[in-house]
Amino acid sequence: MAARAYWQGQIRLALVSIPVEVYAATKSGASISFRQIHEPSGKPIKYEKVVQGLGPVDRDDIVKGYEISKGNYVLLEEDEIEAVRIESRKTLELVQFVDAHEIDVFYFEKPYFVVPQDELAEEAFVVLREALRQKGKVAIGQLSVRGRETLVSLKPCGKGIVLETLRYEDEVRRAQTYFKDIPDTKPDKEMLDLAGALIDQKSAPFDAGEFRDRYVDAIRKLIDKKAKAKGKKILEDVEEPAPSGKSNVIDLMAALKKSVKDDKPAKKTPAKKAPAKKSAGSRARKRA
Image 1 (cartoon, one colour):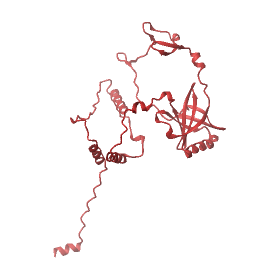
Image 2 (cartoon, helix red, strand yellow):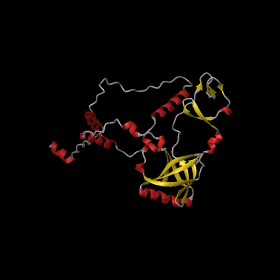
Image 3 (tube, helix red, strand yellow):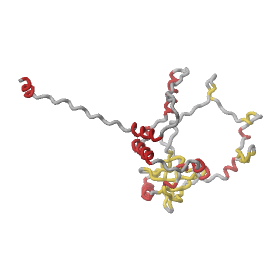
Image 4 (cartoon, helix red, strand yellow):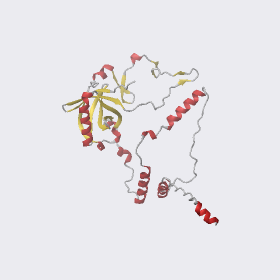
């Protein structure tokens, strides 16, 4: 089944409008989720809406509330919330262009693929993509979907464009709050060179296919075993590293040197040459 578009509309740059479709670039199929089950009956647990001291309540008596202080709420009706929803627009206005490195990694949230909606949109789409690539810029705008306005960025990606939702400033904690106590010292040059050599040895093009979520793989394997065992308990053996009994104090210089030495690719031993076969004439001379 074809993927369903997250958003359809047009990207607008001044007087130029580009009809596009936006699709989610990620999927949640790899994750494992569990349901709570009533073991005696084997049926899933359902949750009731209850009030402490009163018990179950009627769904019609439930309204939304925002806690302004401990135990004090401002109650909001659905029509009041609906009245302030941002109208979903079919236009993404590009209002600013910035260098990619200017946006901290903390702001990026979720990626989406952007493609031209039809053949008529392809020319303008390619012009925007290549202009962004040539200038090394990222486009910024706000996308209105389902009553909310989301900050987004657009950047070239191969033959297409990737849209990434961004967090607003008040959603991101200040890194300096956590990093302020780290000393601003310069490392020893030899240690730095050793660390750099280790990085060089382990450097390779990124390939996401080289990595697996081992927990998810183990859970799937356990589920398969459990299904075949028809409910019998199965405990997986987990290999834990044996305690070394040594002190936690590590000689950093020695550890770096050993790491660089141990991580070097093994040299191939040259194959030994087979002894040359003696000719019939030489064998005859020897016998003589």
